[in-house]
Image (cartoon, rainbow, N blue to C red; front, side, top):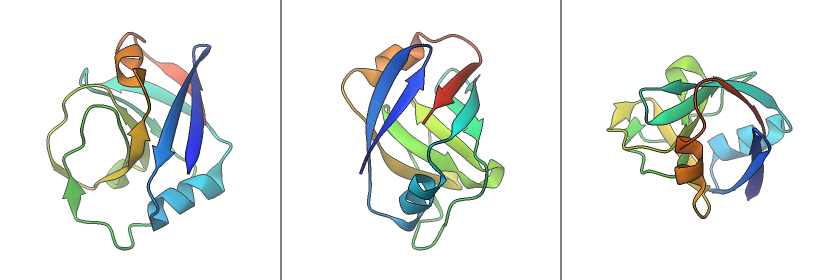
Length: 114
């Protein structure tokens, strides 16, 4: 499944995995998410409702360029830096091309249209 994420006039494409969590995200789209920079490694924003954790591991160590979900705070996450393993992280898919590098250049808070 492919999704488009528009931030500050830039469109980022991502391919999602086949999982209950990704299916839940697709069912919530389109959605506008207010995002903020978190730790200089990720952009995070609260989703309308929680995604399924069915069949997901307890946590994950996302790679630069991953699209994720942080279950404890119900946040959609775009990783542009190196984040370590945390319980509650679910990798939903992967940004395409140079999206992670472009995201790193977007400073501060932003609005994402998914």
